[in-house]
Image (cartoon, rainbow, N blue to C red; front, side, top):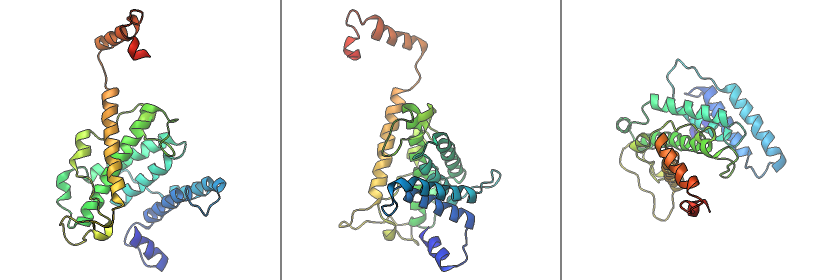
Length: 254
């Protein structure tokens, strides 16, 4: 995106879908407006809404055409913006679109990584796929806990509606996590594993650890909210409620 940004400012011809690029930049500006120190706090929401409205006007999606990396990136950014607003349902839908388009490109398959010609391409593909995983876990988390729960500004999507995650645990871990190496240290012409200088911590480390944290959270949710049989439900009710008087389940109710 940095190269496209420079091309736009220099007036050069873009070799990509210009509408999609401009749409993505406007979503980025919308996200940035929410935290920009040079914008008065009471005006940040309005500024962000203006940029996002422009992005929606520029966004073009054809259901009958193959998706692209640029489309998935734009959808993930849109989902991230929507999760910071009251548009939880739209966030859930947009996240689903991003996931399906990523799967249509094979980004969820380890063998797809072998087809990329450089470590930088592999890194980008891994970032995008795991971005889909992260937002999927996020929306699932909101669905279970309810929209009033807040992590920073809001929380993750599937939980708001009690809807299951779209990406299975197997699929989420099939593709390796992105390298904890900054882009400037990743080769664009070889597939050799990049190395981050010891004296310079990578900004990617936070992203990688966030992915690990959300996967732990997903494991917890799967354990807590997995379906149980009617017989097992009766046993649980009997233990916790009918035996309360005798103290059988009292320790768990206090």
